[in-house]
Image (cartoon, rainbow, N blue to C red; front, side, top):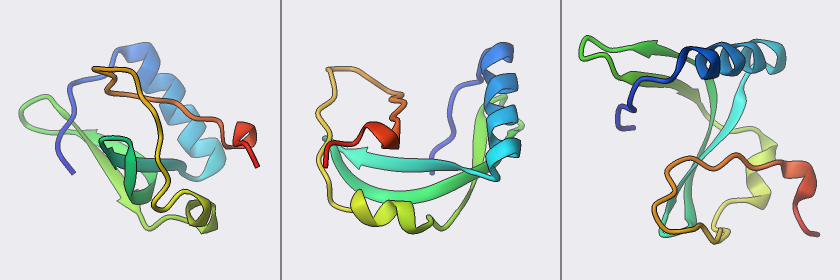
Length: 89
């Protein structure tokens, strides 16, 4: 995984709380909207360069329905927060 730019303090705090409460957050990587990697983010750390490096573990069973799925993103979108409860069946 590549390093990410530093997060704003409030974003980091809220993300940290969600990770602690849930034990890990679903994480997917896409190439042109195609899901190519799944993991669970369990934390992050700041590198010597001041960028964020996420700690990832293998995905849970939630990833089975996403592997190979296509998402349509708007141009230039880096982050996308997806609610799995709203997935069309």
